[in-house]
Amino acid sequence: MTTTDALDDMFVYTDRLQRTRQELARHEVDVLMVGPSADLFYLIGTAGHLSERLTLLVVPRVGTPIIVAAGFEVPLLARQRDLAEIHAWADGQDPIALVAEATGDVRGKTIAVGDELYSVFLIRLQAGLGGARWVEGGQVLRPLRMIKDGREIELLKEAARRTDDAWVEFITQPLSGQTEREALQRLLDLTYARGLAPNFGSCGSGPHSASPHHEPGERVIQEGDAVVFDWGGTLGGYHSDVTRTLHAGEPGDEFRRVYATVLAANQAALDAVRPGVRCEAVDFAARSLIEEAGYGAAFLHRVGHGLGLGVHEEPYLVAGNTLPLQAGMVFSDEPGIYLEGRFGVRIEDTVLCTDTGGERLNEAPRELTVVG
Ligand code: ZN
Ligand code: ZN
Ligand code: ZN
Picture (cartoon, helix red, strand yellow):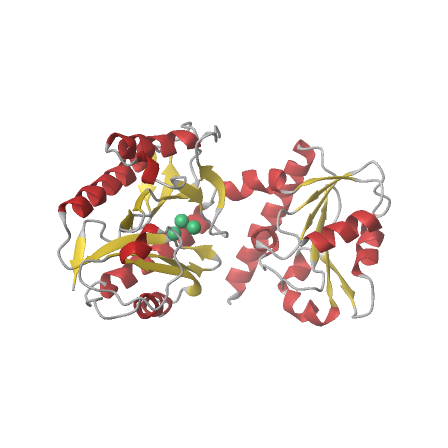
């Protein structure tokens, strides 16, 4: 890392912590506590080490943030020293006592806790810091994390671009004769060879393609199969998340009809995106098109989820979510049709809400592709 990067990082996180304090004031919360998670990465540039040893960032509405961490992990927090005071504990010591010492008397105060803190730590904190009111940290951090800044958007774009690039190379080879596991591994290898950190992948072939999150197995892909790949990696912590559906050998009429419907629904959701539109309206745009085609009952999930440091985060594009879209939100657009015992089709892109509408961050070819 260059000095410029380091300075830049410090500024980014100082700014995020400052805006977090404003949110604490807005929600009348006195202290925010965040364990190892995407939230922690967002606030101080490290996700921390998720384990039975407590690592906790404590952000008071006024005053210096504190990181409570196991002593032997302190060397990993060199950069974070500029953002927070580090209070180390040794094995055999009680880290909860350190937190209590740092926060002082919390009777009558409101403490927000990051959504992903282990319940065992929350229970111990509640026992050790008596008299406080405990609320969900998501309400404080969600408004910040949902709106991506220019640097976050650049990372999401580049992660998407490299994932697309892997796909373009992947589809030059036939699939028939490979197991789902082998085919997925080749796609992931191509993706991670482009500098993305490994994250997740799923591949379902033939009847397995009708299961949205199928765990790839030993089934051998053969001519006549639909094959759904859903995968991604991370760049600087930010995710890519793409789904494409291939067909091994020439598809029949129904597959073509289903594929065309899903593709049109993907486009309809994209076209519905603009600031002020409710999240649920984007889901509705895709769903009504699929319903009209007679496959409403086969669209088994919401149309999309936010994407950033988390692979599933706010905003969720789902019926009942009246949250209005804002410029800077990034989410998936992933309609699917799943015909049990037969085949499934899903097409997933990452979309940025801009001032004027939706912009796809990835452009891996989405027209029907037939492979050997
Ligand atoms: Zn998923
Ligand atoms: Zn996906
Ligand atoms: Zn997704």
